[in-house]
Amino acid sequence: MPDRALKLTIGGLWLAWLGYWVISARNVKPTRRRESVGSHLTHRVPLILAGLLYVAPDWFPAALSRRFLPHGNLVPAAGALLVAAGLGFSVWARIHLGRNWSAEVVVKQDHALIRSGPYRHLRHPIYSGMLLAFLGMALAFGEWRGLLALVLVLASFVRKSRTEEGFMRETFPEYAEYQRETRALIPFVH
Image 1 (cartoon, helix red, strand yellow):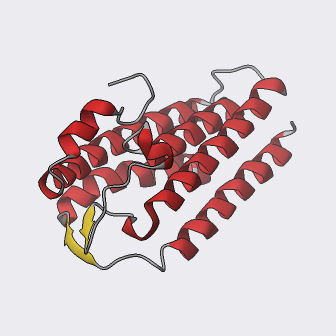
Image 2: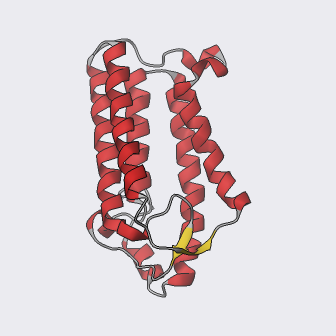
Image 3: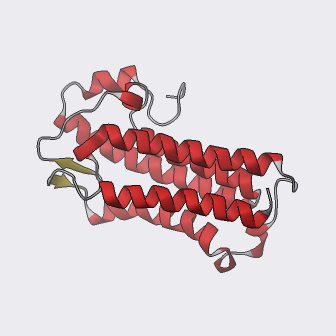
């Protein structure tokens, strides 16, 4: 897959995903409790940096734009498929969350503990899908900046998921059991 077509394909996937995210965010329950601004920044800043590694690579050292994978068509195409699969998985999870969803760590009014769809197996499937998408981008572009972005996203989601889980344990007495029965971000990995 030529570089331009690859960039357009992956960019289009992310724009479609973002469009869905913005539209679906309009119909959520009111927030009852939210994390502090400081807590929010500890997981938001790494996500912003990860995005900037892709949209503004010239802002970072040139060494990050060097390739760790050789040029070719098979790995970039497989990477684009992983981006599509990851974003699709996160949309599936978002649909199951319904009106309980928030971009921040919050407890909604009449919050419900969702255990359907991907939540039967993973506690944070939106993050899992986004991690898969960032892995796909790292493979598709084959540059070190992609691996650094993946590490930043992973660190962000580990931090955010821990905060969320604290809120959920305080809100739902059955959450500890749910934690024992499911994985956090990656299937088969505690």
